[in-house]
Image (cartoon, rainbow, N blue to C red; front, side, top):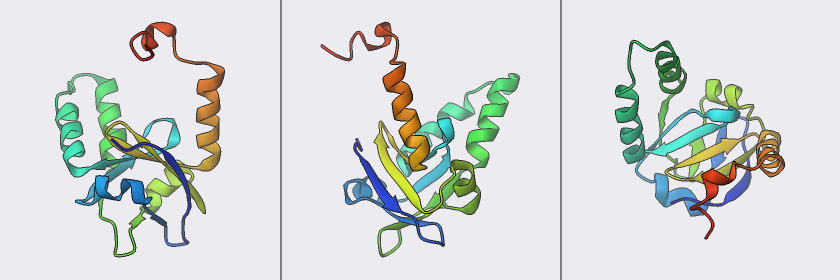
Length: 142
């Protein structure tokens, strides 16, 4: 599982160097898409296949399910690292996530997340200010 957070610069073409700790995780290709809280999700191809299976099982008759599939799937873009281990982030996704010159690349279970640094700090602060309900963490901390 990828873990850690790494600040990196994004060049004017929308490329960001993939941290060495995450390169093996996405070496066979990846899917970038809109994530929650205004970040981008980066799934390795096998992980994306599991996501697709879940999306396919959402009921077409439910408007909330359709809206979520539309949000998540229509923003998806296939990518590979270039020879310099850079990831090209498509312009629509950069705009969605507010990515300009700086990016935080963070690990998460089964995926990576790309964050605007200010949004990242706000998201971390929000958890500190309002931690998850204790019942959610009962088996987390022994």
